[in-house]
Amino acid sequence: MAERVRVKALTPPGHVRVPWYLRGKTGEIERPLGAFHNPEQLAYGLSAEEKPLYRVRFSMAEIWGDAAENPNDTLDAEIYAHWLEKVVIHAA
Amino acid sequence: MPHDHHDHDDYHHEGMSSSGHPYRADNDGPLTYWQRMEIAVRELLVEKSHLTPAQIATQIEVMDARSPANGAAVVARAWIDPDFKARLLSDASAASREMGFDIGPLNLIAVENTADAHNLIVCTLCSCYPRNLLGLPPDWYKTREYRSRAVREPRAVLREFGLELAESVAVRVHDSTADMRYMVLPARPEGTEGLSQEQLASLVTRDSMIGTGLPRQP
Image 1 (cartoon, chains in turn blue, red):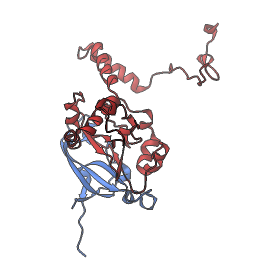
Image 2 (spheres, one colour; image 1 turned 90 degrees about the vertical axis):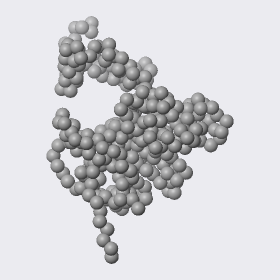
Image 3 (cartoon, each protein chain N blue to C red; image 1 turned 180 degrees about the horizontal axis):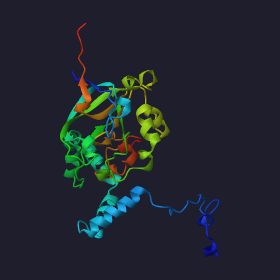
Image 4 (cartoon, rainbow over the protein chains, first blue to last red; image 1 turned 180 degrees about the vertical axis):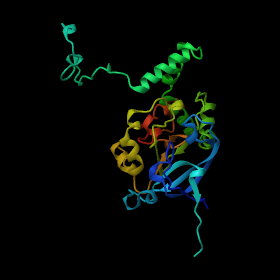
């Protein structure tokens, strides 16, 4: 079963590459992409450490709720690990 | 006499050109901050012998020579060579290089259209595009309208491009938010069994590799 993750609902100042419309949304890891230099530091010419990057798949229903054209359509985006938190599913 | 005018606005043409298009204002306004910055950095790099003007011109020519034809060749090969298609879907950068395309450090992912799924590429944050394979993006790809609507109502956007998808076909939107770039591997059109790789490549449009269109029918 794919790992479920939530995009952190943070609003830090400065350059980030997490679209606003995905913050706080839950999706599944589609695939790991390896590690890349953190754009949040690169944008300011700083020596950026490498951070793991993932492709996360969201359902349109999760992102847009009832306004989704088709709830089962999907959206994939690349999100850095430090913007993701694991979703723990508690047994009923 | 034109040079008697003191105000540049007097040079503006009115109405339509002889070919029926509205005249476009000359771009002789003041440079923006970033245009001045680009010129200053470029001239400094030349002055300090890091680059020559010829090297800069050559690099611009290399980028201008890249076109959707490169991607079309990759797609056509994937249609006729199942092993290549598997390599393309697992590592599209390596597969493009294997075909001799100089794509630099491009990290490319190919996503496949099937009977059940249609893929659409967008970059909501800016205008990320697989330029090193497909060349420069179309102007509409960079507009706020396309970038915002492609993720919110992709089916409506596709309809405006002339593509009506059945509800049973899942739309998969890909937002290029970080280091990867995307190309769509469109489905091979029916009735193309006898065509050569080159003939197949001529059916592959730029838009079919962005996901806003389908390949041409032979």
